[in-house]
Amino acid sequence: CLSLRDNSPSRWVACVFFTALSLYASYACILLLITENLFFCLFYKNYKSLLKNWLYSQIFILIFFMPWLLLIPSQFHIFSLVPDISNWYPRASLAQVFQTIRLFNVGYAANSLVNLLALTLTLPLLCVGIYKSADRREESGLLLLWLCAPLFLSTAFAKIQSNFLYRNFIFILPAYYIFIAQGISSLRKYAYIATLIFMILVGFSLLNYYKNIYPYPEFYYRIGMHPKKDTKGIFEYINGNFKPGDRVIHSCPSTSAPYLYYLSKERNRKIMDWVMLFPPFLEDCITIEKNSLPEDLSRYKRAWFVYSSWEPRDTAGDANSAENIIKGILDKRFKPVGSKSFSGAEVYLYLIQGSDSEDNR
Image (cartoon, rainbow, N blue to C red; front, side, top):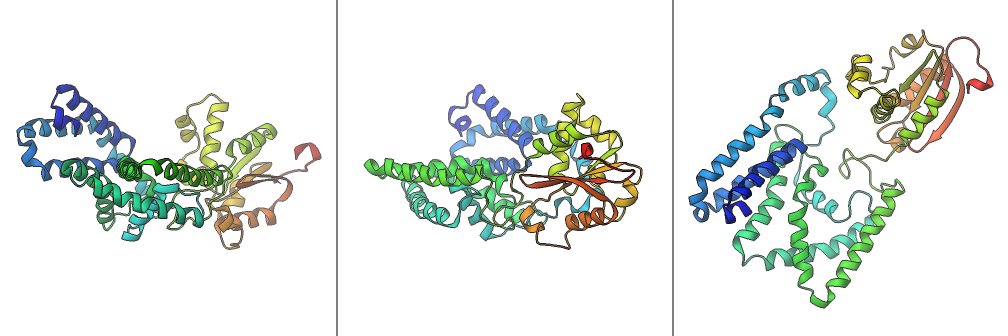
């Protein structure tokens, strides 16, 4: 927008640079690029003389993003090796669009009362902000497109491929908050009160976040967002008691991937070096399939089992979950000799060969 108004070379360079940078940061920002082009088309009469500069900017964005585009086929090949890797992405709906707006207010960790109070505060302010900006046609058009177009474009694209994640739309937050700010400014002397109330509500949500409390279930409400796990503590505990002939296995990639990271730091190796040392990484990921688990462990003396899942509270009561099946096999086939609890996970030590003593625990 500044490039269209100023039309100086520095503005166009900044437009190209930051748009290309956003694409490297997240594929979802392709929706922002489409939104920019929609804005230019809708207000083309006002910027007809800048058509050449606009087309050049889009070409340069494509050129700067080309190195990453060349890698996309190999990424799709990796995804094809694990067909279920994207199945957890939801197919977007109108309800999820409104859910995204709700999350913009106070985030994932807010309980129902805080959500209700925040919505009661922000919805009128949003409407007032949109109404107040209506007389500035271009500015309001840009903000509305910035806020709405990516959400609805993603919803439409999801009919072909599931891709709708709430956190992917963080780049539209400025448009939302600008409208809210315009609504707050209309309150004049009461603006401070509204701001204080909003900060208090956000504070309650932050309190839950730092206490690792997510009141709503993952499905629909916070897809892809999970309680934190003390993966560093888990690594330090296992690494401090690790002995030759030991094997570490995990029931979930949410602990195995961080464990691999800390292992690479501890041994001063690059993370990709460890990927090559544990082939195939995507299949194994230091996680053993339950049907071959006993045979895979037979050549080791002891096994450290990091028992966790993406949603530990859901797994705890499900005896048929893969995590509990793996634990059941270990309990049945091997001798438990120690355990320790961590936030979001349990670590169990099993004796596979020989005898164990207290100092092994």
